[in-house]
Image (cartoon, rainbow, N blue to C red; front, top):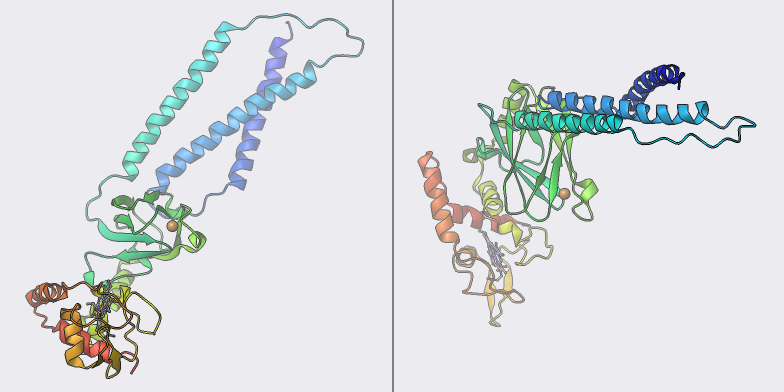
Length: 353
Ligand SMILES: [Cu+2]
């Protein structure tokens, strides 16, 4: 018993050295990527504290065990029974209370940090993020003319609110440099806040196994200076006024979802391909033939049920006339006059000619 003080002093030295060594080893092996968002700061502080606590506990437990194995091993010729001793109530209370208080304190601290990284910020740039098998699509409600972007450009130092939804299964938006991560759930909108602080190129990866091509579900992110971001936006805002009627038709075909059912390269989809149909002769389900002219295309769009193309079913929505009228009225308010039906017809006639 008289040696207890010496034993404890040696173990204390081992624990201190072990803590420092483990901490350096851990932080060398598990290096976090560059921190590129405001949210990364408090998260990294929390992480760092955990690394320290883990290093200390590891050294504490291993220090006592290893030291005891060597110091109290059986000496040659020592055939005595080991000393009998009871539990130490005071010690047990101490090693219950300290971890309990520590874990509760960590929980409270983490709650504050969660509140900080998810807090509403003034002047947020809203970006709508859609995850689908297996790609990311970004929309900027403040700049509707950008349309669907496959890369995410963000101005540096401006708070961003990502409003994220999934078209199919669970996905997860994860950019290690921004530290934060959020699952996308079909049928709901999940919000993730990021304030990028470092100009550069990053990648978003899907962090939720979502099917065969999950590993390829990535998209480029560029964090730009405000002026570079402005020119990125300007480059993509192709004003529809400057487009030819056929080009506008192509845009309408995408905007109104026609291309979900019609291919332009002959590939098979639920509706007939548009490749080369302008001017061709087509068999109808009724057994008769029809010449695909302007009048026929117009009528096929406005009254899809009138003439059914041979081999297809009447599944095309019959509501486009109202949809076009609504869109035209909306554009007319901004001083832009278009004839969506005529432009679509012009475009369809031009496909594959
Ligand atoms: Cu995914």
